[in-house]
Image (cartoon, rainbow, N blue to C red; front, side, top):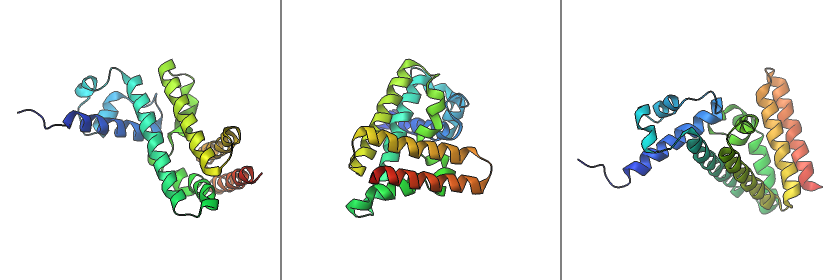
Length: 188
């Protein structure tokens, strides 16, 4: 009996979602194809029916995760008046919730350290997705992409550091300082 129409696409999407969640939490190198497939509720034998290699999956997971993050940030922005949209996004991005929920958080802080050691294909896609995120942030803040790069770098750096320390108070202070610095960048 043949699979229903769209089955292969649905399965592929489950694999990409599983990979995005795993990469956000553990990084690229620490995650195996069998781990990703198990997370999708599948056996690892079917992986190559959907992807040529792990790098192809990494690129698709990056695209998916950035789209997912932009959608979440847009929802946060849509709840505010036009002048406070970027502040709402900064508050969400540098929240304890976002810090603690790596599996659904922004993939950029999770993978930035690994990307320089990844294939050229992965680096190119990551670069494009980072540019897309900076463009989104810049547009929302009504600033040029140079300032948008500085703003997003401040946000990512603050999140990375807040996730890296074992002292909860220090982590919270890093988030607060990052929010303040990010909002000052928008105002300047």
